[in-house]
Image (cartoon, rainbow, N blue to C red; front, top):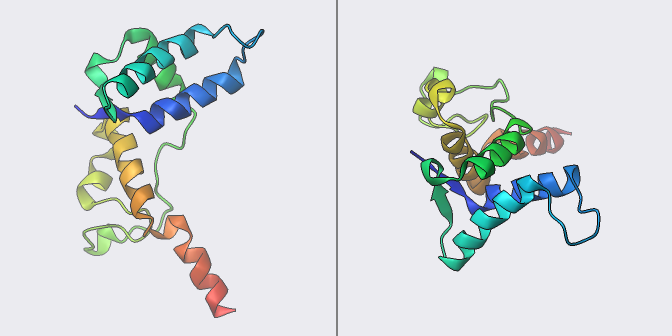
Amino acid sequence: MSGIHIIDIEAAINYWRGKKPSPDGVTLAPELRALAEVYALLVFQHADEVDETRFPAEALAAWQAWYDSTADTPCIAICSTSQGDALCKGCGRSFAEVQHWLEMSPAEKRATWRRITLEATAWRFGRYAERALERN
């Protein structure tokens, strides 16, 4: 099983802060309380991620609601793995990640998203747009 990264927990917290803001500046919505507890434990333990199987049910449900609001796939319909590339030039995923995407857990998908975002070499991160501008 993959872990849920602290950056994704922060994103889920911010999602819920926007969705259910505190009425008095102190009170937190139940989803926020659940996520904040996990976040605090990660900070206390100096950890970057928590195994998705160890996520409390309330926090996992809140995280899943945030996850469901994100893009499902990094695909931009320019797949070079079908032509033999180990990594897709369009989205940055490996051939195995492209092939098994539907079978991957949400945490595994987010780990892939995190990796390709950090690498930022795929065309989905602007290289295609930059190349188009260079031609003009």
